[in-house]
Image (cartoon, rainbow, N blue to C red):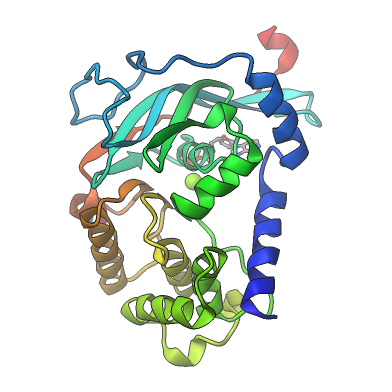
Amino acid sequence: MGLGAFAAAAALVQAAGDETGRLESLALWSFRRAAKPRLGLPCAGRQPAGRKEKKMPTTDPQVMVKVCALSKTFTLHLAGPAVLPALRDVSLEVRAGECLAVVGPSGAGKSTLLRCLFGNCRLTSGEAWIRRRGRLIALSQASPRTVMALRETTLGYVSQFLRVIPRVGALDVAAEPLVSLGRSPEEARAAAGELLERLRIPRRLWTLAPSTFSGGEKQRVNIARGLVKSSPVLLLDEPTASLDAANKRTAAELINEAKARGAAVVGVFHDREVRDMVADQTLELRPIGGGRPLEELA
Ligand code: ADP
Ligand code: MG
């Protein structure tokens, strides 16, 4: 499969994996346009530790990611239905060149928070904004087209697990985000190759599909794919969880280089050493509690 065809297939797989789906998103978008949240309100709710709660206007051009009183509840229609609260009243703010580390036990909602910021999860209440080309985009009102544009131009996302595409080699998997932006395959492969090299993926693996790779090798391909296009906002979901000490340090160096060029980073880092190397502030999440049948909550 050529890189162009792969880029199209990857976008489709991504869209199919989204919680909302395109049609539902479109319906939601038109519904939500009626209720615009007001910018400039101070955020209530949980604030990251290490930062004094500030009533900073959202017009500060350095703020790249802002979340105000965000809650997210999953409704499982086939199980009762049951509602599973995943996030409650979360607020945060990340400026260009800064890294916020999200910590908390398994099930605390860390991945859900990142997926909300990536436009993969519909927000139940509250608001999240991502700055794109100088303008804050409110995610609850963003059309699917805007979300796709945000992903293409602004967001870099390293998911917890690499979504492997059969028969596409590691180098092309890592290069694909740049090809989607219109770069030539040669240029994209050169940039991806540099990252794979730094992350110690042996050249003999570059043309092989990562489906047979070890967990750590897959994760390093995933990091290269997430960092290859120098995104202004990086969302990193446990990018170093399966890495050995040397590769953890390399991943932390790459994150710090991204910060130095002005990227705002929101990341889940279990590893204390990595967190100490990259984080400027920390947000602690706690599990909210188990699911309850809908009628109990009525
Ligand atoms: P963490 O990343 O902190 O381990 P997650 O964000 O993955 O936690 O999950 C938080 C909670 O939300 C968990 O209870 C999880 O079961 C639930 N959850 C996550 N995604 C879904 C989903 N798509 N449908 C239903 N429940 C979900
Ligand atoms: Mg997770």
